[in-house]
Length: 311
Image (cartoon, rainbow, N blue to C red; front, top):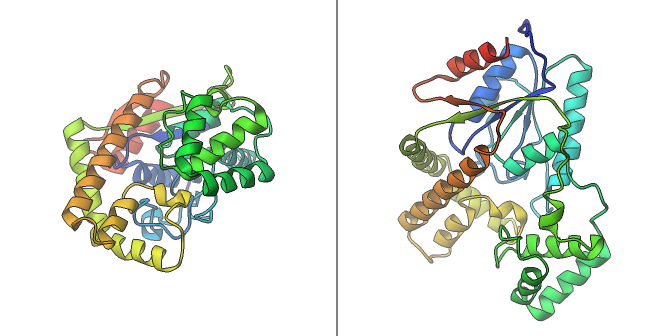
């Protein structure tokens, strides 16, 4: 397919927006138009074995478009911002060297910001420190480590009391670098690493929430319960980072007989709506982005608006 000509030449295009707004379909259609590839900016789609609940695009939805950084990380690995920035940068540089315009698509706002503006580059990993913290967790209990984290880093409010992986990771960062993780995560560069044309897809709140509810119902119809059942039966831990994706703990609670399916779905929908609200708060801080209301618009129509902005 012939690549569209553009007057402006950004380093990459960013397609973002709240969950369920239609980012993937738009990015795939745009990639077809520009004869390029899509790089995912989704912190949960990186994990293997959990597909339906993370809304990974199917081969049919991709229509042959290469879609990078999905379905390649083991569920027990704590994939992080540094991993993403390093790997996404490699794909961007590779595509640009081939004369192609990369498309970044996803709603993990920290990933997008870290990629565009850079992150702290001090060494922050230590297997010895991590193992020591894991042993302490077994002996003292997770609440003890969480209390320690709250004293060390009171601004790390995004880390929940039962999130073992992130608590240990945050303490590891502190003991390796001497700085709280919340401080390091805000040490972005003032000058952007890439020139990006950023587009935020949006909907009125009521319609967005209706889409979220329909998406959850569709996930159930597509086999989400069986996916969670198979994950547990395979022996994967429920404490793995992958299992933090929206919906999995709620479906697991249903499978355990702790709640009804209706209650699990209601909770899943509620948490997803709250997540969308947090995303929108992030997006409002992206000053140079172009907002596109996608109500009643097909992916092709949204792509045409994006191309008009670029040419």
